[in-house]
Image (cartoon, rainbow, N blue to C red; front, side, top):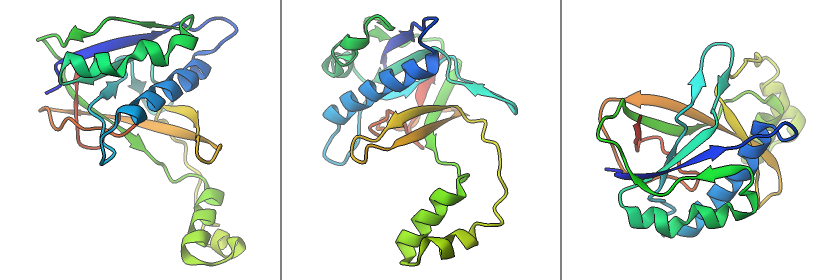
Length: 195
């Protein structure tokens, strides 16, 4: 059970849009979570986006991020303030607090990887099946373009120096499950409190 949380509020400004702040702030959160991950790559800190909204036409993460842990010491050890110090004009961090007793329920925030880019899929197929790119591209020539309404954060891979979209899907569930997350604070099975 995740009993403690810390909330970050983004402070966008006229010349700095919120999506740019999400990229910078979330990159730092990810780096911090990588530092505290266990040997198996698990992290004991989960995240949520309390202002998350999605419908058929558009979606947003909102302007807040919550980090959850089983105990207060884990969030203190993570030290969000240290990771976000150079962005302190653009984000406000609360102190670590107990999760309220009254909850709306529980949610899973997980990474979604929509299959929308035929060129990327063809490159991946060519590499995995040892065929040339043009042959692989033919396999995806009939692929219909679909709009994805899941919100995302644009990040830069530090290993490959490539930009990518981290699509984040929210699912409401009835009961709390698991307490381990990825180095993005996301999980396909572990829940975070929703309030």
